[in-house]
Length: 484
Image (cartoon, rainbow, N blue to C red; front, side, top):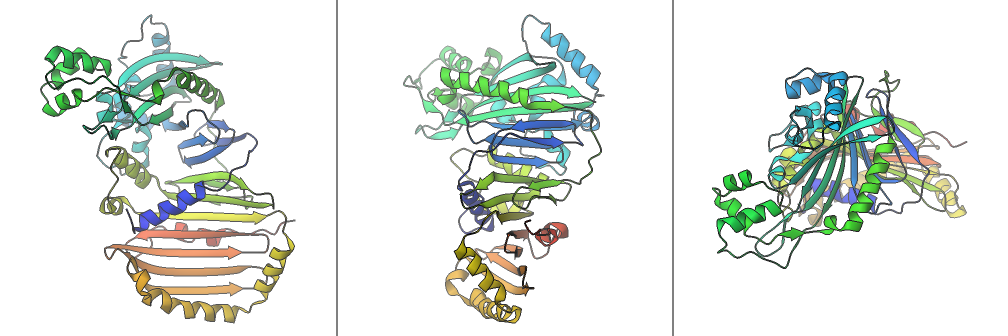
């Protein structure tokens, strides 16, 4: 992915994750339209869309990722081909809870295949809400089923443990996974929560030889959680037999202490969920910006990710970093990446084919300022707007003619403008970029700041034109408020 625009965006996101994180009080994410809320402590990462929310806590013994999706009845019915109501769902759940054994369920919403995805790309946001399991992973996974009651809330649980696979040289082909899916319903909405853990597998010392007979191969399949019938079918596939002869794998996920910590964290997760009757939200879809202390509106079918949302320092600087993009684009990128081998990466051409548009936002505010900063700010705001514009225009030819820059990216049609009214400075910069002489992008950036706060945005669209104007102009619509 070197030298691609997608890599540049990824690098910026990685850098944002590396910023220091300080402890924060518990806070609640509330989705009024979808009728759920989630209480977190201090997430190092969180994301949200119109129907979903996910996070990873900064302090976690397991580094697990938690998500929850609220799927409306009409979307469930389209997926299953059957009518859906909370009453029927909870009745099915009660029947499962009364069973003496947790066998594979008959109800379609309790079956893992309902939440599996393949290589097919989605064109609608709602279609991706069911995406949890890679269809191929299910073939080699150990699956179990059960029910759980937390407070007054009943859940159906699908557990999936995938041992991971190794290549012949014992390098990682696919990571081990421990996944639990918690299903419940209220107000004719299906709620699908997931707890996901991953780790690199390692080879056990015992290795089966290539001369093992069919019985031994079947035993190895059983050890990996595959039943006899599946093993016999797989025996007809030379590739499957080859995998059966590879060393069995192990990982930190199978450690008893890790499993104890994981169970504890999952119990806390279930207690953090609350469900209520959906309300017509007073606000459109968007995100709270803690640095600017205001709500930022986003396109309705988009998803945003915030990195270390409570970044502060001792001098009073507060920073918020977020990335937003169309939901289907992100879902397709994630699913295509997960379908790749763990040791491989999506090629630049594949990323470019999946990419559409996105915007990176970084906002900041100062609660207190030292003397050096105050002197710098005063001098900066005294510079006439005409002088700033001349300096910009002088820089543009260097950007388009610099041979070192052109080795990686060719800039064309650059346009820059600056305004300074003595209280707020705005710098706009638009340009077309050709990366590696084959990937075309259009970018729009804005840096807007006062003495107290500011925002930077970078909008990148594939091709030579803007796609979602409101996203391209997002930072320009954010009003910078003076601290009182």
